[in-house]
Image (cartoon, rainbow, N blue to C red):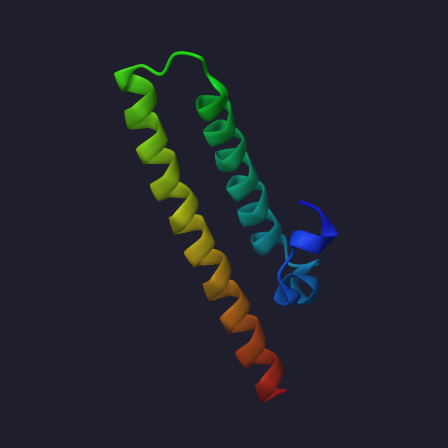
Length: 78
């Protein structure tokens, strides 16, 4: 992920192992989605996989937001 595409909150979490794991998962799902979209022929299985990957990617993004919220709340308390 390029530095220009990162959310401002991502910089707060560079050292957070859980967050980095989620970022890696998110990127892996995106790479798979790109592979499917570049395919000349898309089968029914590919379409199902695309839907599954989009749901997983969204779930991971939600988890990333939760980690960010917890981190912000934790920093606000300190």
